[in-house]
Image 1 (tube, helix red, strand yellow):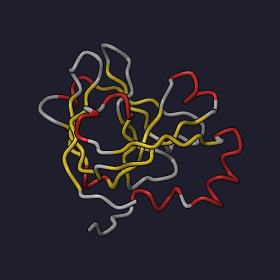
Image 2 (cartoon, rainbow, N blue to C red):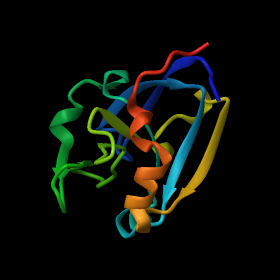
Image 3 (tube, one colour):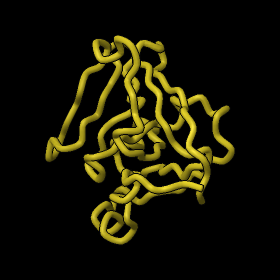
Image 4 (cartoon, rainbow, N blue to C red):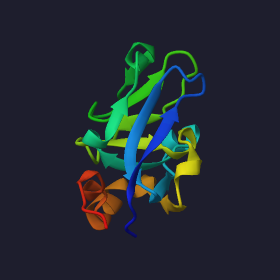
Length: 139
């Protein structure tokens, strides 16, 4: 599923944390069933860190939360508590952007795939999620 790269705007509920991401117009987002993601309703896709830019003074409105191995960096808005993006454990060179926090008008197609986060190790080893943050050439 290759499509051209465009800039997509994203933000938190209060619009204090604003960002843009360069990503294809057609994406596959993952919806996890593990406890943390299920509780937050987080459906996201992953891009290379170099395709992501935090805008303006947004960094002063963020706070970082880690748990377990303290490898993943969950970024929250200090005011509304929304995680509009974060650094996932599976892709330390990438950024996971929360689909609902994006201006959907810039996408031609969004597919949502269910992801068995309760069996994370099997999925990680079999489905190549670590490759999602690698830069791919597009047509």
